[in-house]
Image 1: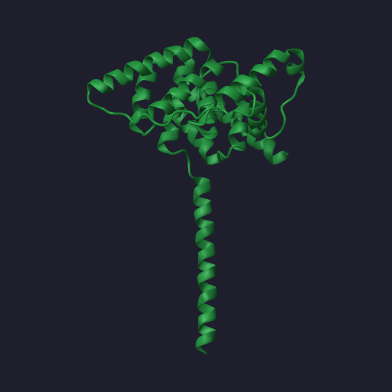
Image 2: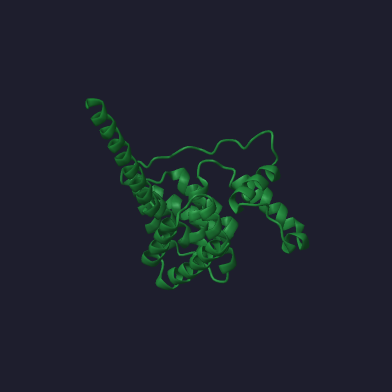
Length: 242
């Protein structure tokens, strides 16, 4: 009799453990961006639009949320690939000013790790091709790259090799930054759609994407958030249909 009771209790324990595991998995799936990830959104968005006053506020909030100096620098550097050198340089200059002001107040921000050297056994194009394929979920080809092979080389070698190959910012953070920047730029919906797909490919969930859009609405504007929401809807619909 005692043996039967033990077996029943063991079965109940296993069932309860399974329920708890499923509940935890569902909770993780429904979680939005964490505080550090949320703080990347306005930093990238305002760098891309060139609004340095709002960027200054976003930079302070990012540091307060726990982003390291090197993580923020990496976001600002990456922005030149999407918004151009002038906006990126202005963002970096603004960040230098923010750090100086915080230093005068006695605030010691965490520097964070430097990027590791790129693999010595691969060229930038080889590394970039691997990264681009992983991000897109398949090899990237198209008429535009046949028409202008140089842009294909620059994308693979420089953007996805030299920049995305730097390991002091993970792919999810890089995509949060890219999506946020594109969402605050006009005329780039096709690229925004592509990067929503890339974000999902690197493990960002629908809940995290919607969290990103909520930050856009609160910090940037409803028009930009509504546009991003519509683009995300198209991406999610196409994945279900596929």
